Amino acid sequence: MLDKFVRAKQPEIELLETLQKEGCFPAPLSGPRRSFLDSLRQQGAGAVIAEYKRASPSRGDIAPHLRADDVACAYAEAGAGAVSILTEQQYFRGSMSFLQKAERCGLPMLRKDFIFHELQVRQTAASPASAVLLIARMLRVEQLAHLAALCEEYGLTPVTEVFDAEDLSRARRAGAHVIQVNNRDLATLTTSLDNSRELSQSKQDGEFWISASGIFHGSEIDEMADCGFDAVLVGTSLMEGGDPGAALRTLLAGRRA
Ligand SMILES: O=C(O)c1ccccc1NCC(=O)[C@H](O)[C@H](O)COP(=O)(O)O
Image (cartoon, rainbow, N blue to C red; front, side, top):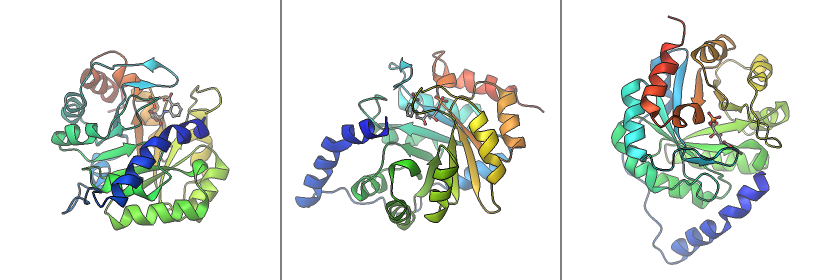
């Protein structure tokens, strides 16, 4: 599955290489970015990163008609701590332009894509994103450490995604301290919070942990917080009903008082 995603990125990488060769690569954004971690920490336990997700390999079209700016602003009004923007085009119908559009919501944004080349980090640095997803399973430890360091250089927070204990060990060897546990099984595309329940036992002091995928109820956010997660990332359950702001309000209201 991950190989397929990497192959689909090749034309985009070639375009970025051409831009670089021709000296037209977009300049990094100047000035400070909104802090991804500060915003989530301010929300306290059970903070939500709400995802703008128009389509996915597991669900096909989810909400292709909803606009990035409208959804991100609805998330901000409903109480999200950050927004996740899928920029992958082929399988998630994403676009880099969504970051520009959603910027007006005022929340820090996580760029979700399949990132393995430093030009992709430089491309993100030219956008208003505050954080970048790096998937431990897709990258060698040295590559992960290199891309994470490059993110930090540009003021972007690297969020390292892991699926199992082996990924977690590799993420830590690369120096990762923001860890996202993905609850999706990449072979079946089904989700189970057991992944987060099990891996959370290895959380170490000083790490910021996010549980991602397969969250549908406020009680699950509470449970993840009880397991030690600092935040959760939610996409499909917010987007699928066509009113993501209302869905986020309902989700947050379902947490314990
Ligand atoms: O969502 C998918 O079908 C998917 C398939 C293969 C690799 C990644 C996939 N999703 C990316 C994500 O990480 C999720 O969009 C994110 O965690 C939100 O998950 P959910 O709340 O279950 O939509």
